[in-house]
Image 1 (cartoon, rainbow, N blue to C red):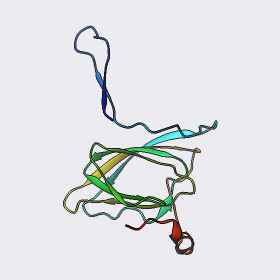
Image 2: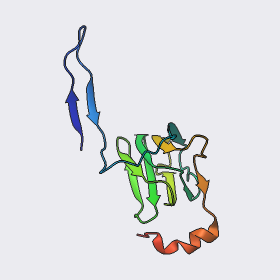
Image 3: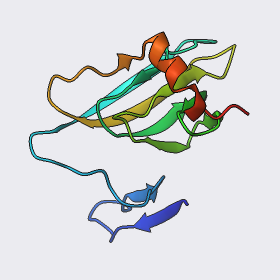
Image 4: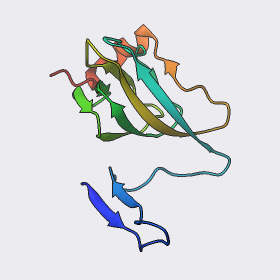
Length: 140
């Protein structure tokens, strides 16, 4: 989906280049009194990431380094590589996996989350709920 946008020339040098990295249909609803948090997540080589969890709001993310093994409830696991972006709806959807897919090097992503001020970045899902929602998980 990469598009390169050119700005008019500026005095003193060439204009910046802006590249659209990802674009999804629609946007997350934006009630008042929310914040946008941008975080850097660095995963050491072989890191399994956090246990199954939920986020308090939607997330727009971009892998800046390495590769992430990623799995959301209702979707098959996939690998998101450096230079690729993704969307996660947050809320009730379980985030099963966000692991470093590389054994020998660090992987990292930058994510922007829309949420209420002070909300935790994630909430771990208990085993009984995982068992009750197992039918919603796509196993490939």
